[in-house]
Amino acid sequence: MEIPEEIEDWIESIGGMERIIGNLPDEKSLENRSRTYKALSDPIRLKILHLLSMHPLCVCLIKQAVGISDSKLSYHLSVLKSAELIKGVRKRNWIIYEITEKGLRYVD
Image (cartoon, rainbow, N blue to C red; front, top):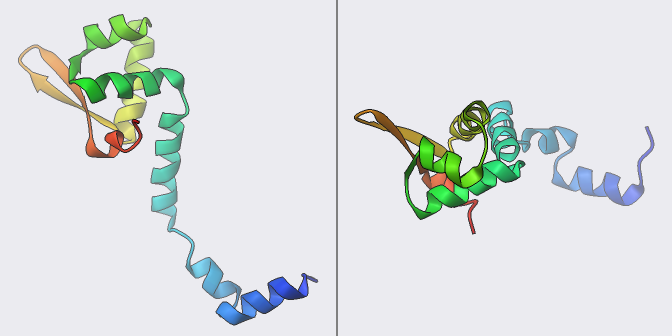
């Protein structure tokens, strides 16, 4: 395989392709990032993050604010939880959702 000389020189100067490949993030890290990016790719989930950045809320209030069905809300909350952007805390008969430190990094 022929590659441009300037790229070949750069690859040699840093220790070869093995070094480049060795500097890539591990699979688990890439999977975690992918899960986070997927969670952040939906406007409804971003709206939920913004809501929870103001104050922890119960499902009924989140539902009222975003205007979606219970099943859709449940799905979006599970995606956000899986990405560790929010967490649910049981308080008596309710689950109160709150944004995590990781989630706060993505709310401006």
